[in-house]
Image 1: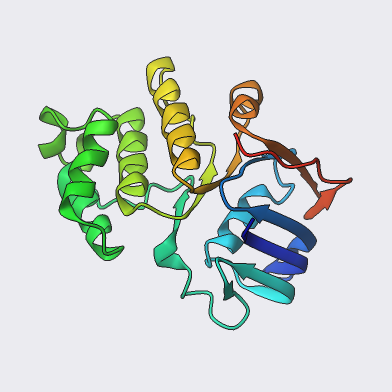
Image 2 (image 1 turned 180 degrees about the vertical axis):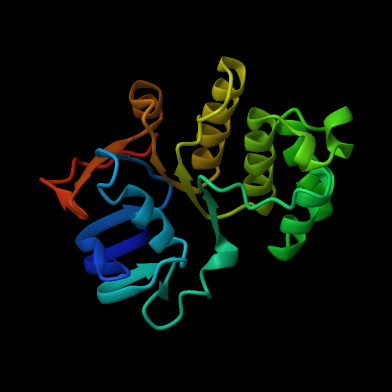
Length: 220
């Protein structure tokens, strides 16, 4: 099965601090992988590095066939990152945000509409400015942007944060559907039991490195 993420002795710096201190990790197409570890362990840095947002300064880093050390921008249209920052434009409406980011990823307008419907944003909220949304509604909008872009690799940093129980279940369904469709998902979550139920494999990160021997992967 195709390897989507291949890291060997990968090092990334935040200033002079090694956010990743020699990570070894392989993730295959269709896997759902849960990243475990305390705050500051390097989980967010790993996700950002795989998205091409944090430069790798040494080691090997290949994502979706792109060498991130040679060109980390090339991977960005094929990857969807849900981070702590929403990445939304406050002055634009929900629909305008989702359509803008879908168009940037060369997705069809129908993909934006379908994503808003999937996240319950196709009613009155579609025409509301992001600045007027609650934290949970902003999170739904960010998720709709990711879904609309139809990425091959989903990188989810605390995807359940700020959501009610219904919305958390919705996120879980979207992750399962994406994996069945062939997408690859790497998720960091403090909702361990919920995220572990989605994952076929768990990886522990501490001190910017992957700890222990990886579990045998299975595709859900």
